[in-house]
Image 1 (cartoon, rainbow, N blue to C red):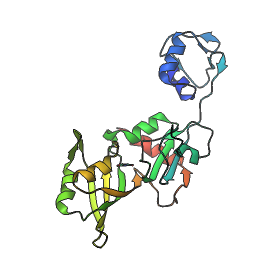
Image 2: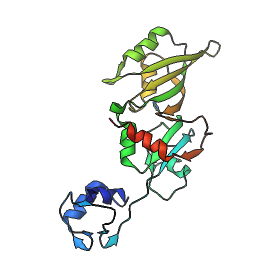
Image 3: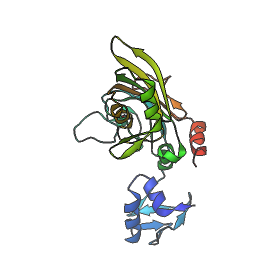
Image 4: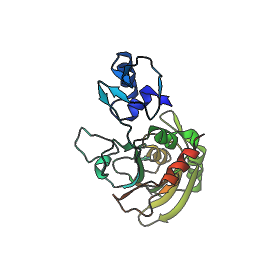
Length: 237
Ligand code: URA
C-alpha cells in the first residue's frame, strides 16, 4: 500500500506537491469515488483517475552511461546545449542521479526511481564516487593529507575519503590523482584541488558505488540489472 499522492507523482504526470493540491481540490478518484484525504493508501489494483483520466504506474528504469564531455547533466537547457537524457532512448521520464559538470566525463546513473536516486546521493550511505583528476602541478604528500583531513571552501568542509597519486609528468608539470568522495557538492573535486593550489585540467568519474565505466565507451550506456538495483536498495542506512 502506498500513499495516493506518491503514486500520482510516480506516474510521472506531476509533482507530489501538485498531486496533493489535486487531491484536496477533488480532482482525484479512486475506484470511481472522489477522494480528498491526503495520505489515502492505495494498492496496485486500485484504479486512480486524475481529472477523469486513468493513470498508470511508470515502470522503473535504470541506466549507467559513460557521459561524454560537452553534455549537460540535466533534463533541459535554456542555452540549447546537448543534454544527457537525449543520449538515452526511452519514453520514460528519467533524470540524472546527481550531476557531472559540462566538461566532466564518466559514470553517471539515470533513473525515474526517486528512492534509488536518494540512496545513491545521500552522504549517510557513504557511496564512493571515485574520480580521476589530471591536475596542473606536481602534488605532494602534504597536500594529499590536507584533502583527506578536509578543506574549508566557501564555508563548506570538503573531504576526501581516499586520495591516491597515480602518476606525475614532470615535463608537462601535471599529476594524475584518484580521489574518492562521498558527497556530491557542486564542483566539489575541482574546488578541493583548487583550494590546495592545483587547478583541475581534466576530470573523469571512474566509479559510483558498484558501477564503473570500464566496459562503456564515451556515450555508451547500459541498463542496470535487477540484481544491481537490489544491491543499491540494500545499501540504504
Ligand atoms: N566534482 C567536480 O568538480 N565536478 C564534477 O563534475 C564532479 C565532481
